Image 1 (spheres, rainbow, N blue to C red):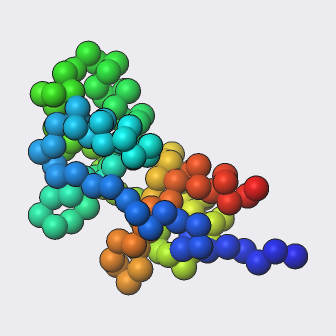
Image 2: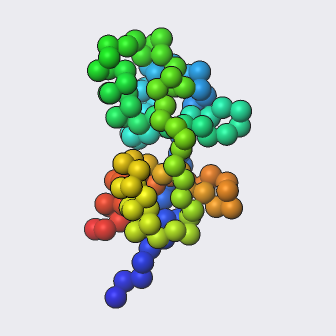
Length: 126
């Protein structure tokens, strides 16, 4: 019998962030270069939102907006959903399902320590 894994065992400890005023062209380029599906948005020292590939498609491309003229703050999803590093993967899965989201900011004692995505959850099952 396999022990239930915790979020901290599979989370990505490296996560990208941009300032709220960063244009979406720069955000998209960063995501492509780093091969990631999301970027956190920081303002006033706090993570205030997240931009995902889905946000870029639905909120920018589908509306024919110029990614050079639109800022991260204008299209970010907020607030950022969080989960404690000690939570089980099942808890992460349930939270993502309930909120219809694919990324969670992982915290330890209220401090951001990583990111977990649906992709990470699926990969942890294999």
